[in-house]
Every structure is written in structure tokens, then in C-alpha cells.
Length: 207
Length: 225
Image (cartoon, rainbow over all chains, first blue to last red):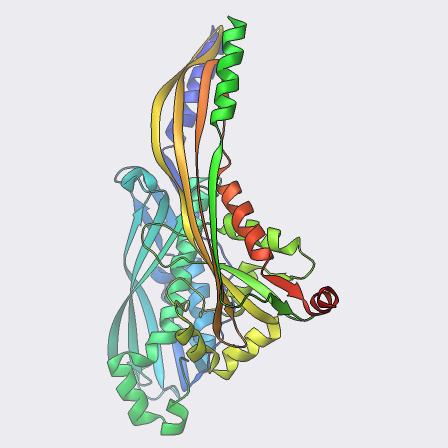
């Protein structure tokens, strides 16, 4: 009898554990193929950004720790987007020897699971605010950029694996948008036009 | 009683079949020729909102093409990573004109050349469950457990593959496959599945047809003589 209650308790605990998912996003990001902008850039990744964890308590509980992965992505992309990059711990005040400073912030994250939508895909939306400053710390632009990733459920073994994959697709999408669209953000485009020689400014994103 | 069950099981096995239709269009009736260093990459379309072409289906087609000694396949993931960010769901070229503009960039062209890609095969479509019916109940108790009931579901696969020649920047042919089949699950104590290989049949159909497009230069000339 005791054995039966023990088994029943174990099943209940397993069932409860099955209702929540905790994922630490993990991936290596490939080196981008692009022309670097002739810009000396600073990259300011704040502590909140590097430790960012999304928690959803509506429906099924989901915890998604993506700070480390998004830090790696932004470092990787920035190192290829600009001719030189220096990682900063604070926003420069006055002359810093840099042309531009980028500091991303997560504004919002939304998830959709098959449990929510009845579709056989996991979806992740990440809304970033890429704050762009001049080298002396003066604000230049707030670029709101949304990244999206999805993955079909069928070929993945677990909900955690599916969420990890969908988030990695979303982060890669963020990297793609940064490389291709950053030089086209109106304020950045005008700054590049005014501050970078015309010949150099023609390099950059790509086709 | 056992005889009836046997008849029912046989009927279900026969019923769990897949119907596959393959259509092809060739721009040029002569086969596509590859020299020793030229390779093929099979890529899935991932831009649509409600579905995406399954990576395992792309692997399956790659495996079918690789069976033919005339074709060397570059792994989809390796290709996409080597050309990041130009073949992501948001950025992948949907038309040849866009690919031409991309290849006009020497950085991208060099990378494609370094991988030895001559043909790009884009596969668009997915497999989905179109109908389901019936129910199965299972119970577990101290004395054991079991299931009882009957469930059936129908799956449909619809895929189209388009072959692009990177050198000529031309569409060299298309293969379309439609497959559908019903699966059953009968439970009298233990569940007995009768699963239709809908996606597997679609892969066989499209893979075999695509393989017939290609021949290696040496092999082709031997066949011609």
C-alpha cells in the first residue's frame, strides 16, 4: 500500500513538473558574411541585458534565460558590422575615440506554444530597443527592432528543446536585421552620410 | 474471436496505405551535369507564417540524392551558417533575381564558390494532419493497466522542389509531390498502431525524381557514347 502511495506521489510530482519549462538558451552563432562599416564602435551590454531572463506565468509556466546567448550574438555581429569594436562598461562622457556606441535593451518578449495556439509550431518574438549614441555619449537614435523565430514541434524531443531552437532562430533573425538594416536606420544613415567618406559609406550591409 | 481480430487487423494494415502523386517539369530534357567538384544543396523554405518545411524532410531528400554517385550534397545547416545572414528565413532569396543581386556581392559569391555549389534545390511545403477521429482511453491501477478504443487520423504532405542553376542563374526544373494516407490505432489492452508513412513516401517520391535530373560529366559522356 505504501508503495502504491509512493508511486502515486511520484506521478503527481512528475505531472506538476511537466507543466513548467525552464530553458537556458544555448547556441553558437556563425560568423557573418558582410562588409564592415568604416566605424569605430563601442558596444555597451548592460548587466540587465546579459542576465536577461523572461518569465511567463500565464498558461504554462515558462522561464527563458537568454541573456548570455544574446550577449554572444551582439558581440559576434558587432565585431563584423564595424571595422573596430570596443566593449564598454558605461556610456562615454566626452571624447572617447569612438564614432558610435550601441546599447541594446530587451523591450518585450512574446511566446506562443502549441498549447496556446493549437498550431504545431513554437514561436518567439523579441522586441529590442537598439540605442545608438554618438562617440561622446550624445543620443543619436532609438531603433526598435523586432526579431522572430519559430520551429515545428514534430521533430524535437521536448518543449524545452523546441523553445531553445525557436529562440535561437529569433536571435539569428535579430543578427540578420542588425547587419542588413542598421545602416538604413534613417538617423544612422544620415550620420554615416555626413561623417564617413562617400566611398567608405558605400560598403556596409550588402545586397 | 481471434479470427475476427485477425481480419480487422489485416483490413487496417491494408488501410494504412499512402497515395502519392509526383509531377515534374524539366526546363531542359537533357540531364543536369555536375563535374567532380560541383555540389548540390537542398534548402527548405521557412518564410511562411503558419508552417515551415521540416529540416528532417530536407535531410531525407539529401540522403536520397546522395545515394546517386553523381551528386554530392552540402548539408543545409552548414550552407546556411557559411552564408549567414543571407539564407535566414527573412533574407533567403525567393526569386532568381534576388539571388542574382546577392551573388553580385563578391563576398557572397566567393563563399558560394568556396562551397562548390552548382545547384540549389528549394523545397517548399509541409506535412499536416488533416482529419482525426475516434478516441482511446487508458487506465492504470495497482493490478496493472490497459487501453481500449480506436483512433484514426489522416495526414497530407504537399511539397514542391525547384532546382536553380547557380552558374546560369536559371530555373532548371520542378518536382511536385502530393501524398496522403490514413493511420489507425487500435487498443484492446495494448495499443496496436498502423501508421501510414506519408512524409516518408513523399520523400521517396520527390527524392527519386530529383535524382533522375542529375548526372556526372564522366558518367554522362559514357552513357552518351
